[in-house]
Image: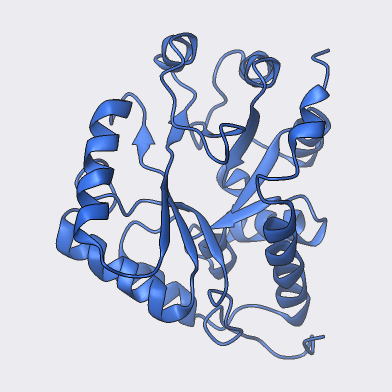
Amino acid sequence: MWPFSHHYSLDEIGFLNGSVDYHCHILPGVDDGVRNLEKSLAALSYFEEAGVTEVWLTPHIMDDFPNSTHSLRQGYNKLRAAYNGSLIMHLASENMIDSTFEQRFSDDDLLTMGDGTHLLVETSYFNPPMHLYDTLDQIRSHGLFPVLAHPERYFYMNVKDYDRLKDMGVQFQLSIMSLTGMYGEEAAVKARHLLWEDKYDFYGSDLHRLSLFRKALDAKVLTGKDVNALQKLKLKAHVESFETVHESLAWNVG
């Protein structure tokens, strides 16, 4: 147990060592993340040196970045060809629930996580999309787990919203930089609440710029309670991962 009277950084506790990054924007030149191949390779090299074992590349698909799954696969293949390290890489996407989502979902034009079992989704930070709960129900009825990216960053959500989503079977993914204050005090407070209450299922760096991520890793803001909860989440994500979920897909849509 880490003493509660001290403050620690993510780097100091070695959080990345042995971790799986379930959310990052390292695929170059496709969204607001890493801009070119050189910087992508630098980020992957940093992860490798820090002890990360696997990385899920999750570029945006949304109105502002109308990427096609075909073009993202092409970019992914180019990155794989250029990377010679030991990291295991996977391609998925972070899917905005916006005006284009329903059509992409109907066309089954999706980049899922796991063995086709999980779909990483997000919403606007400020306003819920129309029919949010119906959309999440629809995702589940098609045999997919919706994984809500960084729920702590949605200003319109509160404790009751989080409880309702969890009751629906929605899984939560923590952006670890939220704990450092990178996205403001409100996001940090919500992240701690959800972390302490064991509401998260996965975590990710949400890395867009390596320099900002390294700065966040050095911030000594974590309490002993944070560290203990993060270690529990790290183990939970590894044990549950995407391999032990199939029995839960018998969930019935209400």
